[in-house]
Image (cartoon, rainbow, N blue to C red; front, top):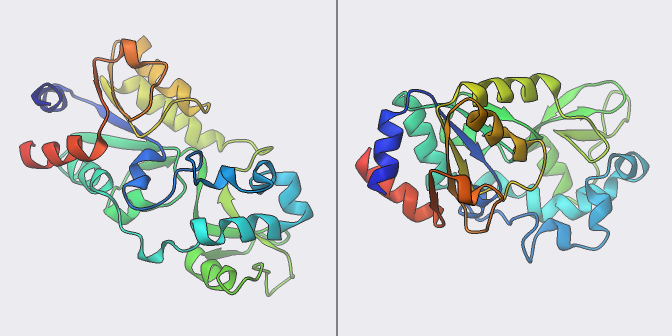
Length: 241
């Protein structure tokens, strides 16, 4: 792991790309794990935008215990260390596939959310917005959050299947990855695009990629360094940088 410490210290522009694996350390289930959201009944409909407009209760019922009970969830050591390394000037930005806002809760300033986040919910009719906390209070009473102005339904600012990714965020992520001389992939299997393509922009511009993940990725054999245990790696970094 000293090799990773040295690489982080020597690199001029380090970017982190994070996936669900870093939030499992906080107790949030992996979407695709054995007990994940995608193992539920009608899983293919939960994040389908057409189904949301047809029956939003399908999403809110499925997501209630999985996503709307996070007020007591704390950032993991990975979130906290990434924020600390950003404050030290080592990490320049975090690109994340996660929607749980734990990077911001940990103190990270530059976070690019490829799939949006639960931080705000927007009315599908009048575009009024309310906070995650307001929605969670409603959802935990087994109700669908409706707008008090127009009675429209509130939808999380999350990219559902059938919706386009936020172009500005994706463009910024590509720009950051292209500038990076080191990109560290954390807790992602790199199977979902466009996140899976992000490391390619670093590599084609001469940068190195480090992977920390407990499952295989398509880039393992081309990574400069490869580790499995996120907790072990970041405890080491916390003591040595």
